[in-house]
Length: 134
Image (cartoon, rainbow, N blue to C red; front, side, top):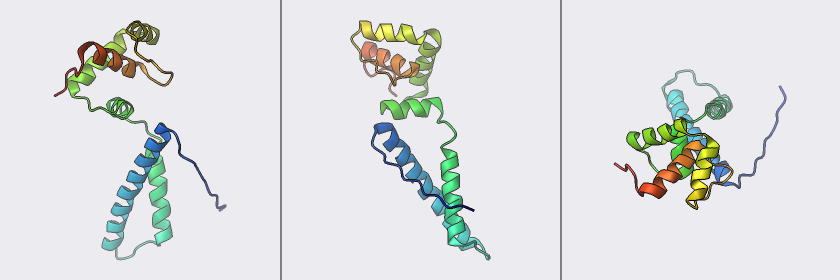
């Protein structure tokens, strides 16, 4: 088996967010594995456990976040079920170019990285302020 190292520099907002999630997941898995080792009468080697922990943490990032959680992370706001359902409704009713046009008409920044739900949220926030906050 060949050993390889991977060095990554995290600088952008999304990259730092991913790193924070990874770090939390590694800590969570490490705690679970440590408990498993303490309970086990025949523990695996520490290196095997660490390797397994990193593989599981990396694997969890291959699965995308649920839409609500992804929107919350990208906007930095918490969404009640009602708020999110309204955003999803707007997302389903309008095409991206229509949402962008509405945002531009109101003088809102659309940015290249915003998805339809983010654009819908920008419009709702602009029109209704702290809309539907429980």
